[in-house]
Image 1: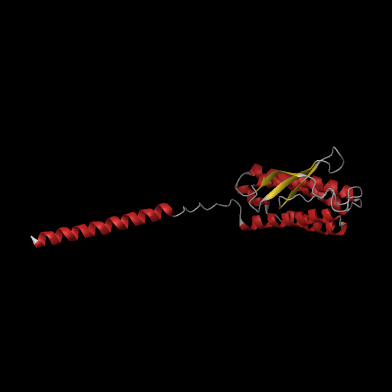
Image 2 (image 1 turned 30 degrees about the vertical axis):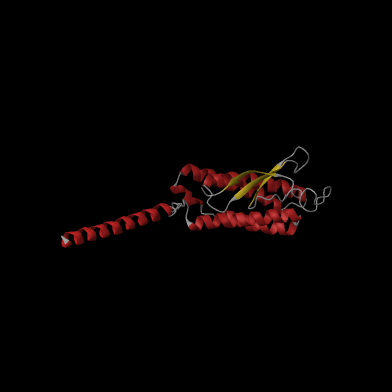
Length: 204
């Protein structure tokens, strides 16, 4: 009889230990956060780095427009054009030949509108050309499936007068207007933050 009781007692201990272990492991599984799936990049690291370089020179150019510094603007335009030229667009061929053709056309327009800034002597004209560069760069980034840091598509409703808006790209949501800038002949720095965010571009 004692032997039977010992076996029953041992069975109860084993079952209790198993139940406690199962409950603990289940609790761990439910409480542990699920790992987010890794995003798979479409482009090579080299491609994305070349695009990032071009964006950085564009942003430096934009900041020079904020300051109204024509020498710095032109220095960054040269760097920007060279960076855009170095983007290995043929990498897009593996995705879709139509995307490659569209990207090549947009790059041609970007350079065609950036180059005159090097010859311009009037800051307002330089800003108008910069506006066209921005209008070409924005769809280019969408065409290639941009995979870099978040960018904001910003708008000033009175960049070239009360009814003449213009857009630009920025890496911050804060509005720092490159068209009215810090030293506008009429507004001084009073319209530096005039504008709004219209869209954003980032890796999905």
